[in-house]
Amino acid sequence: MRRQVGGMTQTVELPLWLFVVVLLFAAVTFASHFLFPSVRWFLRRRLERAVSRLNERLTVKIEPFRLLRRQDMIQRIIYDPQVTQAIVEYAAEHGVREDVAFERARRYAREIVPSFSAFTYFGFGIRAARWLATSLYDVRTGEMNDALLRDLPEGSTVIFVMNHRSNMDYVLVTYLAARASALSYAVGEWARVWPLSRLIKSMGAYFIRRRSRGQLYRKVLARYVHMATAGGVTQAIFPEGGLSLDGRLAPPKMGLLSYVLDAHLETGREVLFVPVAINYDRVLEDRVLTAAGEAGTRRFQARISVILRFILSKLWQRVTGRFHRFGAAAVVFGAPIRLSDYVHVPDARLLATDLLDKVSGVMPVLFVPLLARVLLNATGPLDTDALKEAVTEEIAQARTTVMASAEAIEPALERARAALLERKLIREAPEGIVAVPEERGLLQYYANSIAHFFADAADDAAIAGS
Image (cartoon, rainbow, N blue to C red; front, side, top):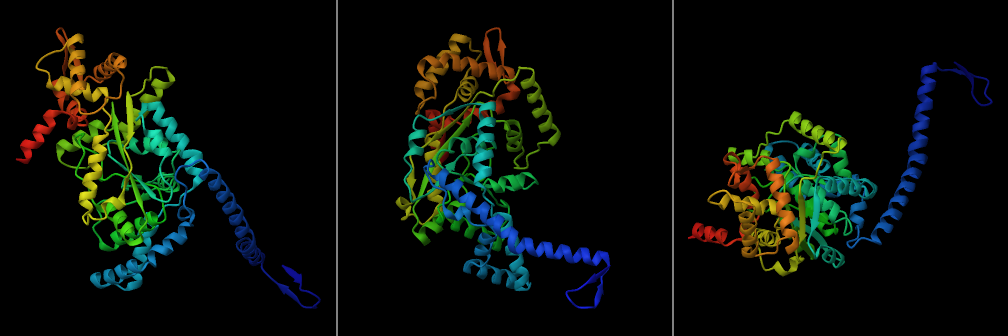
């Protein structure tokens, strides 16, 4: 190619491919210096306006910390003095250069830090959560839920502390807490699958390695939780650390709560814990969980073929009009608790235990767990009248309120019986209803979720402690 340059009489020859490369570099330079900054500014301004409108209706405002660019947040973490010290100690302990240890810390930070998108959370996430929750369950809430969310005070970091029954917990609480704020969850390795991981990060969730014991990793995670707590990010924490395998609340794990406690003590930022109790008439993963409990392992043997077959069968039932929901799913919020009331407690374990006790105290009592309990304790078959009488007696003895009015007990009991019959967990004998012997373990799983409300559970605990 031959071109005349300016007013000079010389000509410069360039190969066509080189001329194209020069043009590409010029285009990239123009875009990076002029076009991209303008686009980023436009999108940033649009995001700020959208968040400002959202904050007008949210009880707990979306704090500026959540709007930081992800890369800026990563830089803040890896250059944090405590993380820097952990990098030096890691390098010395493992005999590697400090720049190698620094890159490992950066990789941990990139793995943990989310990329929150208000558009994704409120434009897609909330709608999807509402559709999925109400499609699968008859969603019920505590009488005071709306009032508690509406009256959450400003200026505190709000943390929802929940029991963990199912992966549907994320969906239910995200949907029900939508009027309060955007929740940030800690999710495990199961969610680190592309493209699911991108969606989850854009919803504000952050990944954690539940089996990691490395000091450097724990320090990076601790500093992120510290910054999020100090920055007012609304969070949701499962103190049990994993799904319940037997239906009961598991002993608490201190990790995330201890990081929250450290942030409060270091910065003075008030933290408000909201106990959240969740219960189901049917947990989608119940057989997988009980099988893992019987095997004494947390390795869930759920084959993808089984999951796909289950999903396709439900979709076909929906298309043919034969699908019905899996009973009730209930979420009850307890009275908020200020962390400043616990500053005299140096041990996070005592705090975690007390918070789980608060969750246990507002656990919803549903009719599938009630019916499971009655049939497991029955000495023989129960006909319709005997069954109703036994359930009514259990309700009277329970040290809590059952989520049904007096006139709704009979239809609720009938729905629970039909659900258990359909799943072949119970059967109709000539003399009445009995538990299927091979399914007593699964029935016990459901009965365990409300066992602490009855005197026999208290007696068992007293015996165990003596």
